Image (cartoon, rainbow, N blue to C red; front, top):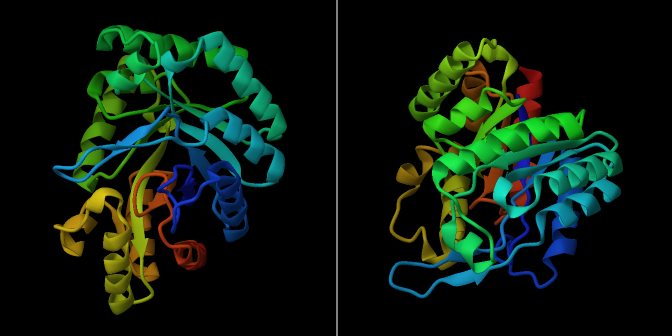
Length: 305
């Protein structure tokens, strides 16, 4: 079992708001490399909308995914890098293949590409992009997976998503990712669908790699975990966590002391997940820098078992 980091690269993603998010994101990639994370992942959006109930949405624009990946590739030496996930409708597939091959060269072979079918219609329309029906988007996803496998050889191509028909495409890729947050039962149900799709295609399901994105909170002990939960509630964009308890929030996530989190990771390892991608507080965020240190402690426990 290895840990990846969903890299903070939105204005809200850091312990305090950051005006220079690209430079700050690169700093976190270096911190993750030093801490022993196996990979850093970057989301691919024009924006996300953040709002609490009854309030106007606040549009958060990230550092651009592929520009940031190139910069990280040039400023790190060990940690793998990846997109999570690049919607296939955002770029011409041939251009995307050239971009992937170029970044893969910068990274000396450390790139993974996770692709998605796309879901946020308003994001497409507002940027002048077509948003075809789901069946066409899935067909485009399948075509792009095949194209990247042909035009960017050596780059692992993942499919990211949860829907059953998407898992048919994942069965043709190098790996499958699902994020954010899921219970063991939910994951095993989707994994069974993936296995069935592999069998229909004549493929050994064990040859499809698995990764899982989980929002993560680690405390040194139970009292420290409660303190960090209260800090997270105050930090959360749009006051999103003010009405939920730690016990409720923990259920589909990675939460506990280093020993407890290591135990949870071992259970995920038993399901065939090779990498859990941690996001501290919210997707693609690090709300508390000490979480990286606590994750290092957790990895040490995994290595010693």
